[in-house]
Image (spheres, rainbow, N blue to C red):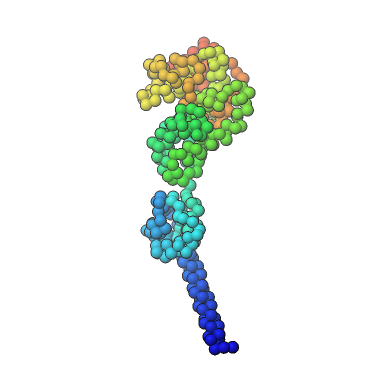
Length: 338
C-alpha cells in the first residue's frame, strides 16, 4: 500500500473516532440535561406560562417558581428537543421533582391544569357570565357580550337573539383564560347532546326546541323539588291549552331585570314587559334561565293531572289545585297566614 493511502486511512479512522466521541458527548449531554431535576422531591405547584412566551421566557418563569434549577440549562434542553414543538401558554401543575423532559412534554402538549366549574340549573346568562369570570375561565363582560350576539348564536345553531337558556347547566372542566368563544361553544354543544334524546318527542307534540326550552326555564325557576316538575309542567300546559295567562312570577322578575329589588309587588305584576305573563297570554319570547335535563324532560312530559294553580308551602314544595276556589283556600293556608 502506498504511504499516502495509509495516511488517509489513518486520518479517516481518527475522524470516525472523533465523531463517535462527539456523538457520545452530544447524546450523553442531552440525556443529562433532560434528566435534570430541581429537587428529588417537592409538591406540585401552579405555574402560568404567559401567552406568547418564548422558550427563554418560559424557562425564567419556571426557575423563578423553583420548578427548574437553572433557566439556561432548561432552555438548552428545550433547544436540543426543538423538533417536539413550541411552548404553549397556560396554567400548568408542575413539580420540582419532575425532570426537564417531562416538563417540556407538558409545555409542548398543552397539558394545562383544568378547573371544575359548576353552573347550577336555573342560572341566568348574567349569572353564568359572573361565575365564569370569578373562576378565571373567561372575562364576564366578554361572555355576556358574545352570548348576546345574534350572529354568534347563529354560528352555534341557535336562531335566537341570545344564548339564554341554551348554556347547559353542568359541572365543567375548563383551563383558565380559555376565552368566551370556546366556553360558550362547549356549553351549547352540551345542551345539544341533552336535546337529542328529547327531540323526537318534541317533534311528535309539535313543539319547537325554543318553545320547550322556554317552558322548561319557567319550570326550573318555579320548582323547589325535581319530583314536582311534571306537576308544574301540567299546570302551565293546561293553562296554555285553555288560553289562560301563565301568571308565572319568575317571568315577571326576569323582565324587570335590574329594576327588581328582591321584593315582588303588585305594581311589578302590572308592569307590562314582553316577559310579563300576568299581562300577556302565552309563553314569553324566550327562556328566562338555563333549564336542566329534568326540567326539559318535564316540559315534554307533564303529569296527567287537571291542575291549573299552585302555591308555595314554604318548605320547597307546592299545593296544587284544579279550581280557583281550591287555590284561594291554599293561599289562605300557606301564604296569607304568614
